[in-house]
Length: 179
Image (cartoon, rainbow, N blue to C red; front, top):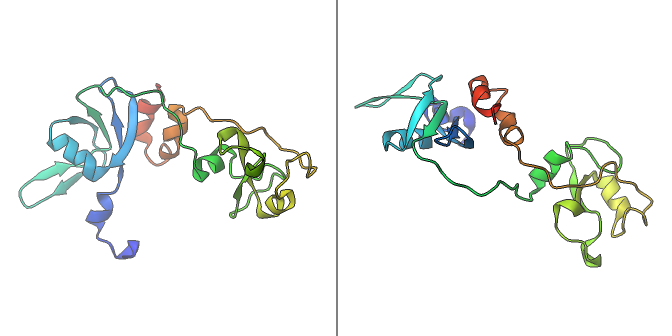
């Protein structure tokens, strides 16, 4: 179904909500629907209510923007998943060989896989289709192409994880920037 034909209520239920641990550490972003379920079950409390309310036949429910869990969730140190989206984000959506931005970037193995190059953060870079074809199944030195920046595993800081939401949701800033 097209987004323009969906009801405003269904679109509202998909709005993002910041979820904080009991110690106010940002954990993740969930949908408004999930946030309301956590609040109604007593597992979370509303800290920011900047969206008004949702009316049902039997209740009036606030639409939270930020919720806090009532208990501490222990989690291991964060690591980013190795995905194309994260590689593009790390490389700022530019080809690491020529420096051009393109909507059609690809992921290139610096050391080709058939030569023992792994599918790791340190061996993957973004490349435009032209540079990827030019490099082919060679190393950058064999293809006489230099990398603009050495690939690395990004550190998943709170700002890195939630920064994209801060432009639309200014009320989140005080909870995210303290970490």
